Image (cartoon, rainbow, N blue to C red; front, top):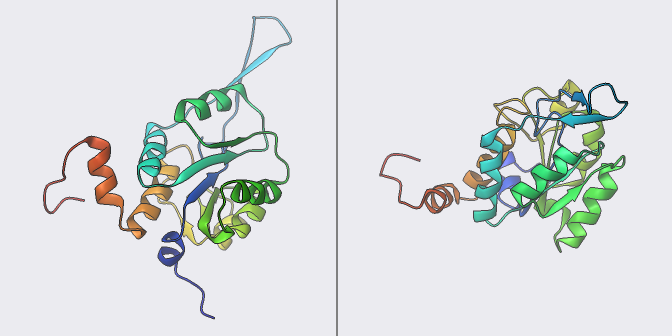
Length: 190
């Protein structure tokens, strides 16, 4: 049986799951002592507004979203709540098992779920779904197994690229954008 094209795979997607560090962020970790001089640290991260908007666009397109990350972070929990992600799993070493559990909870088949990753820990989840997405700055092993590689790096709009790719493949992009901004796009623009 011939391998499906990335667009054909994307047409089936109803659930988009992704890693955080290196996908939703640029992968850098920042720590700040709190209060000054104590042994306690606060972690903080930067998130791109385009990625945040992509979650709203995905929701309008009927795609559920969620994250699976090895690290645990209050910053990530706050951002996930802010974005109203349906699935939030932190502190996960075995991303494949977690991916499978989320797909089952969502009542979907594995081919209806996609995973966006950047490093080798993401490969099992990427392999389990119907569409494997690597960010532009992903490790070579990850890019090699991806069905689609985003034009932007992690933390720089890569998740937006993935959402846009899926919605365009499903023929929903124009309608979703119109609904998001509350007006019809003029002819010739999309």
